[in-house]
Image (cartoon, helix red, strand yellow):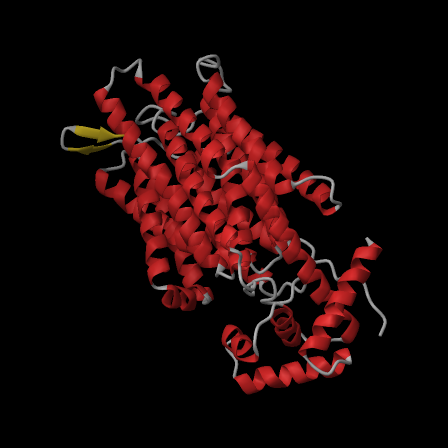
Length: 474
């Protein structure tokens, strides 16, 4: 049997465009609005609109984690996602109203927060159907495009900017539907669980979440001091978004080099984003009074870290054999929950401290949280360990694709082959693909016939020979 080279999955522009629309809406909702304060008894909270949006997002993430079957059925329907887009668009319209009342601030947070969270998990499922590095490529490409679009929205007339903001959720859903018909990736293959995730990977994911929590807290602290109540939420937003776009371009180049074995893209993206964030904290007093302020650099670093974490949530979910949508729900619940907690604590700090002392004390505290997260929780060594596991997953997928192409397997047979190569029994294959065991047995018999083997062991031997052939051709 002649061996064909592995079919290389390529980035899907429909997925990139769709996720860019989603990310563009998130950036606009978080940073292009107005800093609203909300009175609660003797206290007032700055960035109340962002705090409530984050709180409703976290509540939606928790709800999805507690009712995954219901969420899966709902998010699989195009009508549900279109309804979420309508809610987000309505929330954007509410945010455009002058003189927003407390009730309107709460309504904005609810209309935007909950559907935005559930749409994000739907994107987790969509992006998680790719091999880890391909998912990372699409995430960083979309984030860079979204940052560029956000710069454009900043300079558009206000009415046109809000109209464009209302359209973005619908455009994102439309591109997601188009991406489901993308032929670059065999449906469901890379999303299939990976067998027996090592315990160190599960521990790694726990530490990743702990690090994400601290990064979120640090970002939340800065959010409370980025602007004054009643003014633009992020005065230096164009500079921050320009840095984000440059960061994403750099990571994409690193991912391309990583395919040639020249660099470790996962570790590099984390290192650069951390350096940006820390530089913003360090230079905040120095850059005071300039347009490119320290908090703009912090924001750019935080958004870069958010994109890095999104790609890592995809990768760790596949390594653990977990659902990528639920991995997004868990990971971003922690990240955004930390950001909400940071806003809450910073407002408390503001209420208890002198006006001119608080901002620098808060920035120092936030910077310390970032250093602790990088040094003690989720470190570069952890990134390298995760990257090694990702290499193993990518190699398995290359072997599967090579066998499928050389023998003419169907899409469903390729799915069954992927699970068989990962040690799944026939019963387990049937459960994971939601088919009858007899159907799984039939698919395996056809795979054996097309591959010219007589059983599972000979199929594994064929996979080993194919892996050696691929290694020799690189």
